[in-house]
Image (cartoon, rainbow, N blue to C red; front, side, top):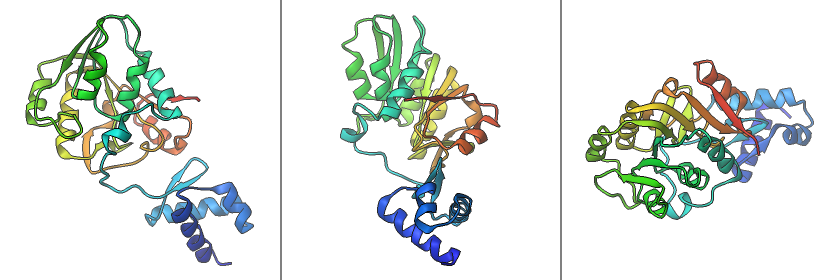
Amino acid sequence: MFAEERREKILALLNQEKRVFAKDLAERFQVSIDSIRRDLSIMEEQGLLKKTHGGAIPPAKVRQSPPPPDQRYGDGTPQGNAIAKIAASYIRENDTVFIGSGSLSYVLLKYLPDQMPLTIVTNSMRVADVLKERDWVDTYLIGGRVKPSGNITDVLANEFVRQFKFDISFITGGGISEEGVFVATPEVGAFGRAVAQVSRRRIGIATHHSLGNDGFAKAGRIEDLDLLITDQDADPEAIERIEALGVKVIVAQL
């Protein structure tokens, strides 16, 4: 079988199964893992797939709509929970913290220190609704136009957030790579930049699904993060590229 034919079959498998592993492909096509890795590298250069640790997944679109609220706000994946648990450990008593509207941000609420006095500012009605039951947390909701998702990211919100100063902000997005932090719309990107500007410490949180991906609207530079927390399934090469820019990366283990 010629290499071109093998790559066509790999692409067909990827389209069908949504994920392939180099070891399985090597056994299937009776070639070395190095040959498969070269195939995957060539296919990634052609935009046909995205390499991951041990295999490949379909390429991410530049612009992806966030999942609907009933899917975004839930218990989270094992990887997301591992990341959120580490992220919450950086919060100290009497901190003022910004927690946004991403799915990982919502998972983070489960791991907030119990009975520890905190001030939390959010642009998510869902986050505020959870926090209002905790009398040891002073909760502030950013004002502005409420979107169907219950999130607030318009021009009013952008101006509103500049009235605050945060000890920590937790930053996430649909794509986080050496190119920056990316979100779905320019409006959300502008809001994210405003949050970063008033934060003393910026902690990025991203599962392997978004790490290494670019996106449509840039919310900030990766170098502006003081720390990035991801999970053990993240692409090691993507981590290395981010670390090369001086950002400390912590990998959460399951």
